[in-house]
Length: 169
Image (cartoon, rainbow, N blue to C red; front, side, top):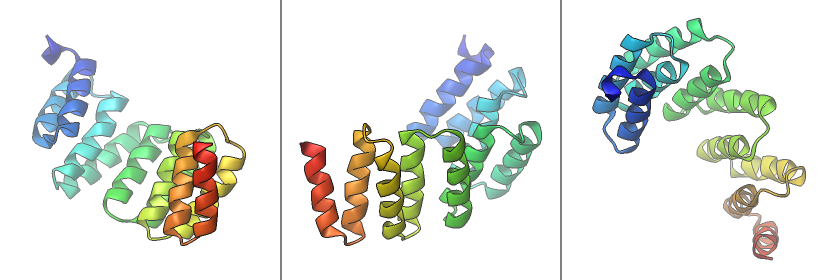
């Protein structure tokens, strides 16, 4: 039954990718796109699936298709940033994640941006960003935990100790 439902096939593809089967995910997505060639979720996931399969040209082509169909969609920016991150193109990824955070100021988006700073090797930038961001979003335990970790990695041991203490208090 799922083979006839593009949404179900896209969900199956997400699970296949998470389970480490990018080839199966690719097959499911291409079947989903046969049923609905403009599906934003499926088009977005194709980019990441092809990248995880090591198919850089196909990932780039899929991103161009996504960008042409949905140039202003937040998901297009997210996928572009995720692809840049997977290629260790940190400045492009960070710029994309900053744009996303401006549009959707959520703890999840703040953490993704902080992770990009950390992956780029700039723990101080991650810590500084999270220090500022968490002042206006004190209710997010996951952000406070990431703040403490980034302070620790940046060598700000006293600040990290204080952040960890606030986290468990």
